[in-house]
Image (cartoon, rainbow, N blue to C red):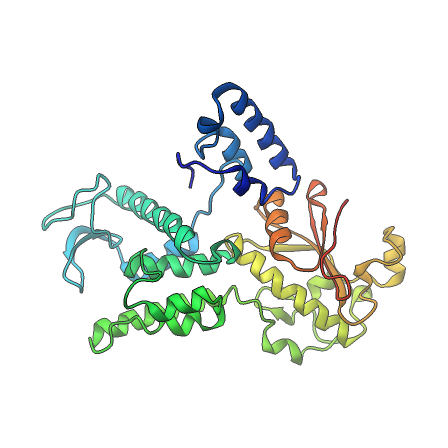
Length: 358
């Protein structure tokens, strides 16, 4: 969220990768430093910071808002929530101007929608400051915690009564977060508990969408499986072959490597709001690799167990933002191809982290 808070050079250059939008941002920052001084220049409401943050683009929080709307419901007229508070719109306790909701109050749908977005943005900002490893999480994981916080308060991290989920998040025990969420459903309150249980289950399900582990059904696939067979919920076997028989995997180990790559592509999809991931190059048999001018040692050959690659982009997402996020989160090889419209992810087990430009 763009605001007037200051940022330090240490924070800034911790994430500097020499990407084009970052270079443009630094040029603007240099102008600010020369013209208005350090203190005024190092503010998040300056143009350079908007450019650094991918032209000021923020998550639209569609997943979080959709889940919140599903469970809160729309109320134009003030009503008492199960906890006994006067509430309005999408479960808000106050009006856009900060006034507390009182009996007899009304709100227009447009105002209610904007109030929901504003509230969600504030929660996002709060959680980014209090929840450990927030920047490592996928978009769907953010959405799950935002819905949780919208219901139970954005100050839950480390608070009394929230020891279990706080401990799981602090330890980065992400696999246990959905079960921890389920504890916070007000047991013993009959229908109220049932509603909260459904919400916690929905949040847990959304959270799991960002799980890094390859799905168990992958083990059932074989190189000869139908192209429509799914490596992960959103990635098919055929996508790694561009749905061309001559590009089909020949060995089981190749498919297993692709499953690891596909699992990370699910994280990418979740991080960028569920937008489709489009694979432009997966497996290349030697003849095809030669015909397209690929390197003789290309990772796209999937030559040995534990080695392979995929080139892709996210439909409708800033390719440089995708590349930067992958650079920070992918532990193996990565080729900076954003200037050509793609990101290259590769695996070489004996060389865990390599970076190069195209």
